[in-house]
Each structure stands twice: as structure tokens, then as C-alpha cells.
Picture 1: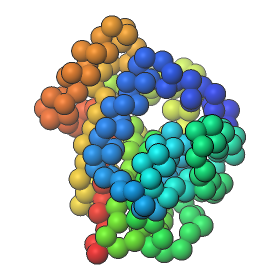
Picture 2 (picture 1 turned 45 degrees about the horizontal axis):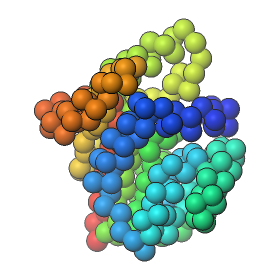
Picture 3 (picture 1 turned 180 degrees about the horizontal axis):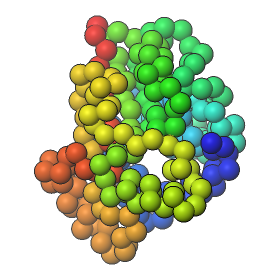
Picture 4 (picture 1 turned 45 degrees about the vertical axis):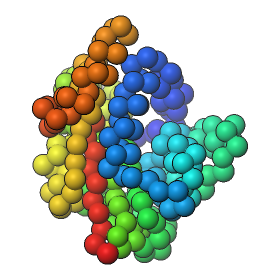
Length: 226
């Protein structure tokens, strides 16, 4: 999959009312599990245009981003420089991380794991570069959601980024990572009118509790043994 071809569309999504809301809902559960601490070294695998990494830098973390898409990384660097933020960005694969063992306090990957050809190897690499006592936090598109069903059906009729990805359930993620905390977010259906977004924002906390397996965004947190 050539991710450089979707760079502009990727960032444009977050400027829409629904895209902005989805971003907030996803980050809320991601930060709740990750608990980023100023001064920590964080690696963002599949950082794209540095959406998460820039926010972590603003929180005072030492930020490194990795992606296979050079155009994505250049866009992320431009966005960061506009905010006066310097990021360490590397072009490499998430299945062959060019870092020493135990180098990072927090290893993060958001909606990139779905595209790895060898997820078992990716998990091994994340585990290798995360220090003892550190956290591995991975967010994926949830197989058990309306969004995933819609994306899969649409991919039957036209080639898209979702044609080339694998959706995961929490059961599959726990099988790969072992014992881990997990939750989901984004219960609003795709394509809802803007006026309904505030309603779903109010419902999010309740749905995370009562419809936990079915949110469109699934995030797990694996804490390394000290």
C-alpha cells in the first residue's frame, strides 16, 4: 500500500466535524491507557503525519516517529515546525525497528498495525524496544464495528486503503499481546449528520461501558514487566 498517495486526504479528514470528533474520542481512550509522562521517550510506529506525536511533544515527551511513507513524514515535519516543535522522524518498517533494546518508555502505534504483513514480528519488535516497566499501546480498527463492516463492503467495489488492511477484534489483539488492558471508542455510525455529533459525544462514556466490544476504535495497553 502506497500511503503517500493519501497524505492530503488523511489530514483533511480531521478538519471535518465528524473526523475531528472521532479524533477526540480516539485520543481520549488512548491517553487514558497510555498515561504519557513528560520527559519519557516515546516511539510512534506508523506515525503518518504525526497527529499523535505532535500532541505528545506538546505534552513534553521526547518524541520519535517512524513510518514507511516519506511524504507522510515530511507533512508531519512541516506541521510540527509550524508549531515550533522538533521531532525525530525515521523512514523504516514497524517489523524491523532500527533502535536498541529497551530504548523507549512508551511504544505507540495507532491505526498502523492493521497493515503489517507480519503482526507477530511487529509485536516482537515493539516488545524488544520497550524498556522493562514501559508500556506498549496499540490502536486498531475494530473488526466488530459498523465502521469496519461498511469499509469491508465498500472495498469489494473499489480499491481503497481498507482493501489492504486487516481488522482486529479484542480477542485477536489479546492473543497477540497477551494480558493487556483494552477498551474501545467511536460508537457513532459513519456518515452521521453534524448535528448528531454532540449527542454521541455525550453517549460515548456510557457506550464505552455497555457496548465495549463494538466501538470502531480498539486500543490495548500492554505493560512490560519491570
